[in-house]
Image 1 (tube, rainbow, N blue to C red):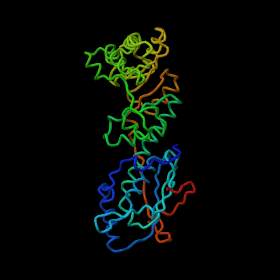
Image 2 (cartoon, one colour; image 1 turned 45 degrees about the vertical axis):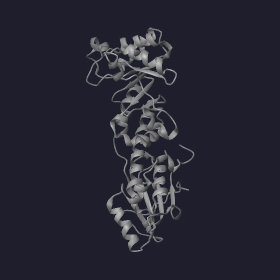
Image 3 (cartoon, helix red, strand yellow; image 1 turned 120 degrees about the vertical axis):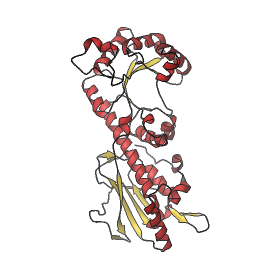
Amino acid sequence: MPETRLDPEVFRLPVERLRRGYYSDAYLVTTKRLLEEQDHHPRVLMQVFQKEQSLLGGIDEAIAVLKLGAGHDDGAGGWVDGWDQLEVRALRENDPISPYETVLTIEGDYAQFAHLETVYLGSLARRSLIMRNVSAVVRAARGKPIFYFPARHDHWLVQTGDGWAAHVAGAIGVSTDAQASWWGGRGIGTVPHGLIAAYDGDTVRAAEVYAKRFHEEMNITVLVDWDNDSVRTALAVADALGPTLWGVRLDTAETLVDSALWGEMGGFDPRGVNPQLVEKVRSALDAGGFEQVRIVASGGFDAERIEWFEAASVPVDAYGVGSSLIRGKNDYTADVVIVNGRPCSKVGRRFSPNPRLELAE
């Protein structure tokens, strides 16, 4: 868990649009407008929770939204900041959280922050989902590296915050510089299929050129499924690159059976990256004197599948996990539960104080 909260400037928030309610549900924007027009300024306590056994993500981003977006127009085209008039208490990034546990409270003039609810709840929902999913695969991998590879499965604008959430939750690497930007890291990757195609389908040639250019900047890992003969290709790449090769990545499509398994089908599901294929590649590399070459398994992996591989002691050194890390939901709810010092909430909701909350400054 980070020792200090991220500075609001890290998030590069569109502050003017946040203040205007551009990203907010319209009824919340009109609520703020009405309260201000009526000169009605109830002091409320807003309470935020979710309904899963999860990890808290996006809380620093939510606080930043409040710090930079709370306030009101001054009537002359300017803005009067409202943060100093709020009392905000919150848990920390990556804190374990229980269903219905209060993770954030905001106390102050409701007109100062009513328009921000959509944005801070969305930040919490998205980042907590990523943290929860990444944490699950990290636990399943039992200490083996997890490479966070879902960038191509979602809109590019989510990369920065998602990458931070994955990093905090234990992912060892991310695939884009945007995902790594909040902690000053860099994206990692492998020799891709596109480069192999650019060298006429010659995996070894593509790997040689790539390694010559980039081996001093990154660990060289090569996809070896282009010819659907992962054993032969892995050996050829290892022989050509020698000590500059960090690992090979198995990525056989779930609709294909690697040629190394054609003579053994019948007793197991031979499609995609399976334990038998990994064993064959590992045995071949070891027999060829390439014990130092690591095996990265990717293609349809989630926590359940990683658990299966680990329980079977499949010799995988790292897992590349993609779309499963951005699937599911982890929604948050915000309720006004106290108004002007007295309980006031919809039926079924009530003030639920949490001694774990810390004052956000």
